Length: 171
Image (cartoon, rainbow, N blue to C red; front, side):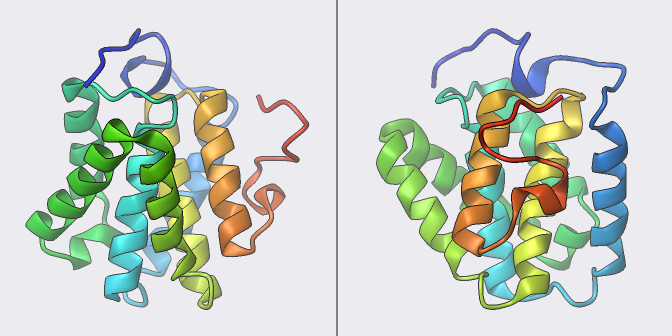
């Protein structure tokens, strides 16, 4: 694992930012769907998305892994699944991404694609990624980019989630 500058991404403390209302709204939407999101495909796609966001810049240090894991285990919707299953799948994806980012990313996107046929599940996976990305009050360009890629794989518009077009800067 490579240690990165904590001023970018998940380690940067923040008092919030322009995207924090978006994160709060998406969390509320996910919480309302808790009973519907119980499939193994949702679990697997959510863990792939969390790993993609954590490794979006190509680096994940142990503190960042712990932080994202704590967010996962504290996520109301993901409490539908045993903690050990979530940990195992998240770490498997993170390890693949750190060994060979392009191959790990391809594998994670394939897992995400399994959620595409179910629009509710697909949107929940994207919302989970945004919540993880915004947990520190900061969305890095790399995080936004990987979430946009996930939207493309899932057949969803990034604009639906307040992420704008790929060629437009985000706040």
